[in-house]
Amino acid sequence: MSHPDTSPPGFRAVPRTGVIYVTAEAARHGFRAGDPDWCNLGQGQPETGPLPGAPPRMEAVTISGDDLEYAPVAGLWELREAIASFYNHLYRRGMPSQYSAENVAISGGGRAALTRAAAALGQVNLGHFLPDYTAYEELLDVFRLFSPIPILLEGDCAYEFTPTDLRREILGRGLSAILVSNPCNPTGKLVSGDELANWVAAARDLDCALLFDEFYSHYVWRKRVGEPDWMVSAARYVEDVERDPVVIFDGLTKNWRYPGWRVTWTVGPRAVIDAVASAGSFLDGGGSRPLQRAAIDLVTPEHAAAETAAIRAAFLPKRELVLRRARELGMTLDREPDATFYAWVNLGALPAPISDGMSFFRAALERKVITVPGEFFDVNPGKRRAGRPSRFRRHARISFGPSLETVERALDRIAELVREHT
Image (tube, rainbow, N blue to C red):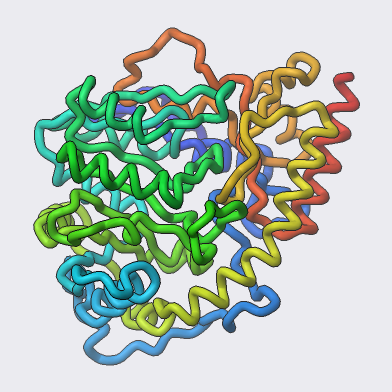
């Protein structure tokens, strides 16, 4: 059945985010989730099955009578307490200021958490980086109270952005808040250690809220001196949990490998938590009560440590494989990923027409391989740069979230594609 291109009266055409767009296009070519003949290197989720050394997968949830009711919009108190304890144990031991349940709100997915925060912002200038997570584009456009201000990062300097640069942008552009994925989706750049401490200090000194999307913070491949573990969070560098303007988003989606649960959280000052919970009361009404209750047993330092060790053992070989094969095929990297399960590759040296991210994506589809063109990460709220070619049109994001066997098969097919055009 065909669908008209025009929207019905009263509605606008809402663009799809990068992963949703490429998945929909793949579906037109016969892709179905779980089809073993397809290699989805566009996926934004990790493999979810058992990993050697990881805690057993939770595959059944007990539902009590109380769980048939709505959950509180801010989330189950017991889960909020567990998450506060998790952050205090991992990042705040010995510090006088500690998180409590009142510093945590639960949401039904990462986008829900980010949307609540966006809805709670006032008439401010909000900084965001280029490139960054594709879903930020509509998020930063749909709420018109704040003004999104792009901050350009350059590939030829590996997307570096120092605390001095941060202070300059805050003061020069009059920023009251900055949204950043750390680790960054898609480049894999990680701000950690003393550098992250200085970012938090800048926010504290200049009264600018830092909104940290930390959904990939347990997929860390390079750590700075002084980082005691392979899990990174700005929570380590907050001095006062009520006064420091630091808001953190995370959840079971990536770091616990339960994307289908849609259990995520926001951690920050109580005033922020009250605001995002109020926004949730009209945006989404709250998350799943049974899954929140089941999540309490998962959000422990011991579980996270075992899961993170298993992730490193399973994902590091996939990372090394993708980086090696990408270079052998003529792709370049502005920066090797410090974290995440993505490689941000530059296709410019490949033969035409597959030297363009969108053309590469469409050619790979013919071989049942899905990638994400780089232009989707050129976050452009309101299409204010319409008509100009994207700075990232020669880039693509390749995910090593699928199984090693799937990644190997996909890279072999991409190699055939490159040979065909050489």
